[in-house]
Amino acid sequence: MTDERAAGQVPFPDARVHFGIFFQGVNHTTIWSDLTSGSQIDFETFRRVATTAERGLFDAFFLGEGLRLREQDGKLLDTDIAGRPDAVTQLAALAGITDRIGLVATQNTTYNEPADLARRLSGLDVLSGGRAGWNAVTTDNAWTGANFRRGGYLDHSQRYERAAEFLRVAREIWDSWPDDAIAPSRHSAGWLRGGVRRVERDNEHFRASITPTLPRSPQGHPVIFQAGVSPAGRDFAAAHAEVIFSPHGTHFDDALAFAHDIRRRLVDAGRPADDIRILPGTQIVLAEKQSEVEEKARWVLENQITGATALSLVGQVWGRDLSGYDPDGPLPHEDPDDSAIGGTRGAQRDGQSRLAIAQQWRALAEEKKLSLRQVAVATSFRSGFQGTPGRVADELTRWVRNGASDGFNISPYLVPTGLDEIVDWLIPELQERGSYRTAYTGTTLREHLELRPPLTRR
Image (cartoon, rainbow, N blue to C red; front, top):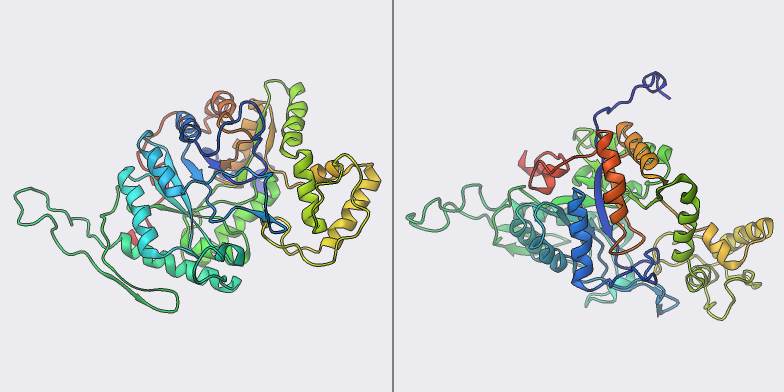
């Protein structure tokens, strides 16, 4: 603890919480079986979530994207939510029914091409008046690559090289129209005044000659989000990103260490230490009374990990179909083979030894007399905050004013109603503490996030 904190002072006493809503699409943590849960595909669900977030003065609506449904043992994972319309298409539709909230599309740099993707993102940015963001993700697995003619995958070490070059090309495309490119009067000799720069590339990643079709939006470029937390991912964020979406949204000390590391890497990359907004993903469970918090949190967790989901999660570790097992019975008596867990189910345990995990789980089950489902619940990767609105508001304010994050990307456990309590209960408490805006003061996503101009426009 620093002397400043020991004295009761905080480094950012006027910091305010930034909120985004993370609409995941494919996952098992959204309680799709609840009577209040809506479709994951119908536009009405997206409309309801986005307009509720805008009513709550959120910075952004953040849409997950995937080019393939998740699988386990070669079969579609039917315990998952499976609703993923194309992100840019969905956000373009939302741009027409919202006025201020940012619209962030997750898009892959491994299996897209700059000329096409940069144009689509620029189109979203221009049509929304400067509210677009791009969560630039990479993929190195062959199962997604199987969708594409070239197949295969990029080596892990190469995916960030391609992503960096992808972003450089995209930014050149967005910068290709000069500020005064469009003629100021209908009496001008031509509609375009001044040239549009052609973007040329011929290297190991891209071969293209591109004539960009759109001017810049009011915010200059779409805001660049990044979600990698490996050392390579952190370096990539420090060099290229403006917002980082991290998994450190539960434990304060972990989040603070991550934030310090990102700020150090920013300085090493020649950028100001505050040049990135850190928005960890999190879940928030609220109850009006403290006596109700534990029961509600337990209801959420038990509905997220149903019997079928528990069998699927444990089956991932055992490497076999356990659908015939009793989820309220014991763990399987047979040992899994000692191979590493693959990544088709997601990356949470990717690469870990099956046998080592099974041994840990058996010890836990024996010590605490747990069933298979109870082990799945106890070992799940859970994130977030639980409590009354006032207590959660105090904690979120502590995070941003001590520099552990700049805000949070909220994954609601119910869709589309999961933001209602946050907007109606939590945000007024934050506003009362002076740690949340009371109105939008800008019109672009860059302004909401209080970001500097794009890196190439400074």
